[in-house]
Image 1 (cartoon, rainbow, N blue to C red):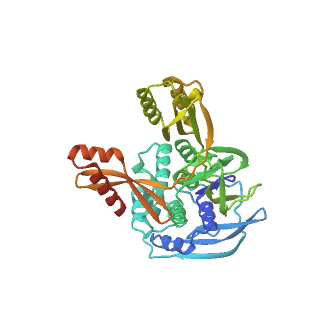
Image 2 (image 1 turned 90 degrees about the vertical axis):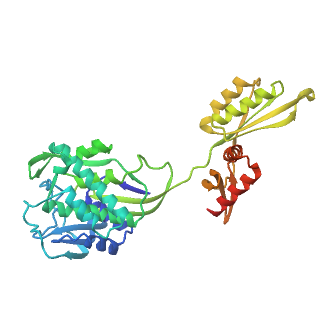
Image 3 (image 1 turned 90 degrees about the horizontal axis):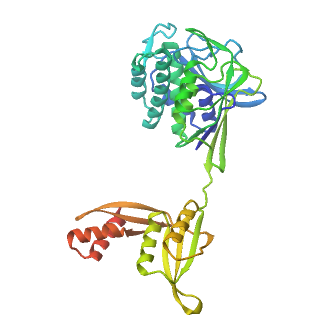
Length: 426
């Protein structure tokens, strides 16, 4: 599970840097980016200090740029309130200079979502990385369509901004795939204040595309008094596109920590911290309910067992017992989850003559299991596969065995053994 701590906002380059610092493969990243076939940019991967803390840096430098300034999607946002940080060390530069079919220094050239989809689909990225990148780009395009009041197919990404965003988004997708991230939690995202200059004029922070994404995908923002833009549309789209859980687990173990440095200098360290975490498995909170019953009919007891199972009891059984004055009776035992306990106690009080129920917490050792569906010559049937070390035990489901026996007239035991044999071969 990935946790992104966005106390200094989030951008595409910060995300990629943090994932690289977590251990994503640089070689796989550069191979994937090279397969996009984009021209006219360099990638610099290095280290950058923020408030005395060293972190990974990832910069996309376009042809004609000296400072690695960030162009973000259609609006090409620039924050003039802060200077960029150029304290690079140990940087590795990778140049992409193919035969130029477009001049990347002419902003009148555009790409739409279909063009970008084609670029990603024809690359050598894995299918999972492609799907992630396309999902994130779709979020950006949706936000732009809402902001400008255009259909999504008419949203165009200006050439300079598009190259930077394609690289950032595809790089993030490649790194997420390489780390095998299957779940992600995004913290509350801090955002700055003031205004930014863009192609369309001066816009307030957060910019409209960021607010559109945050509103649509339920990202939580915290506005701060830090002057400048801390959340880019690409960063917001990545957060929205990868998040699978609303909150962190109650208890978890930190496997590794990575930090990605932003370009700007803020009073607080401009870092995106990423964690790989493992959730602590919760113990089952089970309860045993017990009561002695000596004055209920067999029909009533059978009805109670059926109702208890239908209400979610894990197990129900009756044991013969002798009560005071040697009266024969039944001991009702019910295993249930904590959240079912009160409802099941209510059913027992309602449908039996008991006036008291004993209860105590229960611990158990449960073997892992799963339900299999097999195809027999008489139809489909289910079986429960139970695992203990390298051993597997298969138990056909009673209802399916009984149904096939009724439908075919075959002996119950013959159908049971055939289902078990087929399940063992799965």
